Structures are given as structure tokens and as C-alpha cells.
Amino acid sequence: MKYKSIFWVTADHLKNVGNFKDYLVDNTDYLVAYHFPASFLKTQSYMEIYSNGEKVYSKRFPAFSSLHPFLKIVQYYMLVYYILIRYVRVGSFALVVIAPFCFLSGIVSFLKKIEFVLWIGDYIPAKTTSVQFMNKIIDYYSEHLPYVLYESPTLAKVYLNKMDETSVSKKYRATVTLGIKKNYTREKKVNKNLRLGFIGVIREQQGLELVFDYLQKNMSENIIFEIVGGGYRLEYYKELAKKMRIKNKIIFHGPVEDVSLIFKKWDIALALYANKKDNLSVYCEPTKIKDYLSYCIPVITTKTTYFHKNIALFGAGEVISENVKNLSNAIEKIQNNYDKYIKGVNKIVDKLEYDKWYADNFKFMEETK
Image 1 (tube, rainbow, N blue to C red):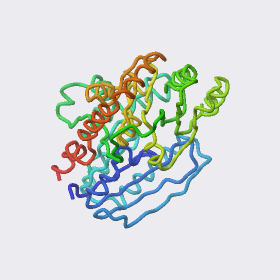
Image 2: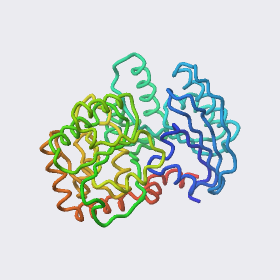
Image 3: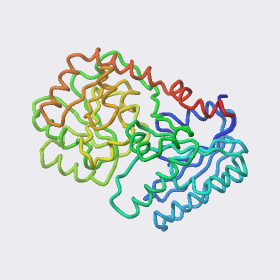
């Protein structure tokens, strides 16, 4: 095992993005994990303990569904410190993704020699008082904790630019993006016709209108567009498909627990983030793109996220500006040179293979113990 003892704290729906929890389970002597639900859900938070890769203990905590979202965070915070004191071993690393969970970390670090690691995964430009307050908390721990990781180069730039260079040089700061697991291998186009796919939260700025326009202009072609996921704009897009008379070309799967059977049927996957300054995807790790690549699907994306450069560099898909003509041309290019794009996908997956990727990026947890 690479690591002696780790405490992994994150939201339940993010616990294994990039196969990170799988990696920790397989490589940690003693792993304690605590996962909490999104604030709008009524489900319980829970903890698990793994010893040498085997689950040896689990416990669910009461869910106070009527609590205000802020009070839910307070509840999760209290449970984090309960677990830290009762279950986490002396000399562990505590890897958390929520900056407020670092409050009073200095006391726990002193008492149990626990090193806190904050892995920052997003950034919201300040517009409201609550967001400004949260950003100040993140800024503080980004500067003062001994170990801070940033999930994308864009995030690293945002936070490091706020900090004093002398202070930063004395601490561990690194950009650690997500790795990729090869879930599927393909050698050629799956379908005689064309099957496009999208997964994600159904909301604005995901480029769905652009795809709908493309489908409307290609009524004579046999094209299917599959959408996986739920969100507050799901019903809107279902109605839009009816109004545009393309309902027969779109399959709305809703939230899906196991996407493997669906992904294996897709020929091209879409991540058409709107390239606008107010789109929070500018700062984040594009997890959907890495999910697509893990199933060996060529990707069409925009220049919104940092990862578009990797897609272009490895030839794993096409990077476009947001209009129907460019989308149509990109789809045609991939269809006509499918084998070439598959080779590009395999190259990028090999480079970011999750086991080696995390081993390289988390050496600090292995070597300081």
C-alpha cells in the first residue's frame, strides 16, 4: 500500500469522480471516508472504513431534511470532526473539498498530528454576500494551509494570483486534475447511422440549444441524440424538442446510475459549454469529457475549459466555436476519419490513466509519512 492512513471527505455524488475513491481504497492501508448529499437532497450522510482494500465498517447518520442548507453544512461539519476524533488515526492525511471543513483544523492537527489537504474544485465570482463570505474562507485556507490542491489550471491561476508569492513558496501548492479509467475499447464506429450523446446537469450554458438547431437542420438524416442527466431545465428542453419537431430524434434518459451500456452505443459525445465569462464551467474540471474519453468516444467541445487544448493536441475530437455550421463540420470530420480520432482518444487516456496519474500527483502523502 502506498499510503498509511487517509480521511477522504467529499459530496456523495463526487466521491468517485475520476475513479479517485477506487484508487484510495486500493492503495491505502486504513481509509476512512465520509460522504454527504447535495443540500437539496433528503438522503443521509454516511461514513465507511476500509482496511487494506476491504470495507470493514459503515455507518449512516440522521438526515435532517427540514434544515436550511447552511445548517446542513454545519451538521456535516460537526460529523466530520466527530469522525476525525473518534475514527481517524493519528498521523493521517485529511483530504477535504469544502474549505469550511478546515475550520479548527489546527487544533485537530496538533492533537492527532493530522495534516489537512484542501482540494479546491470550483470558483464562483462574488455576486452575493454569502458567496463573498465563502470566497473569503476559501482564500484564507488556500493561502494558509500547508497543503492545497487545485482541480484545474484555471482554478490554480485564480487562487494563486490572490496570494503572496513568499507565503506560497513555503507551502505545497499543486494542480491535480482528475485521472481517467479505460472503461471500454473500440476500434471502429459502432453504428451505421449517427448516435450523439450528452451527460450532465440539464441547465443553461451546456450547448443543448445548439445541438437542437443542428438536429432541426438535418431532418432527413438518421441521427439520434441521447441526453443523460436531470436538472431544473429538463422539462424546458423536452418542450423545446416538441416545438422544434425533433422529439423523435432525442432520447431523454434522465439520471442513470450505470451509464456503461448507453455510452458504449455513442459515436460522438458533446461538451458544448457556452464560452461566456459568467459560465462557471470556465473554472472547473470538465468531468463529462473525461467520462466520454473513458468509453473511447471522440469529443466535440468548445474553448470554454482548459481541457480543449488536450482534445486538440491529441486529436481526440474537435474544438469548435458555437454555431451550427461548425458543429456540422466537426461531426462530418469525425465520421469520415473515425479511426484517427479513436487513436487520439487512446493516447490521451493512456497519458491520464488514473492509477499512475494519482500515484505521481499524491507522492506528498506517501513520502512524508
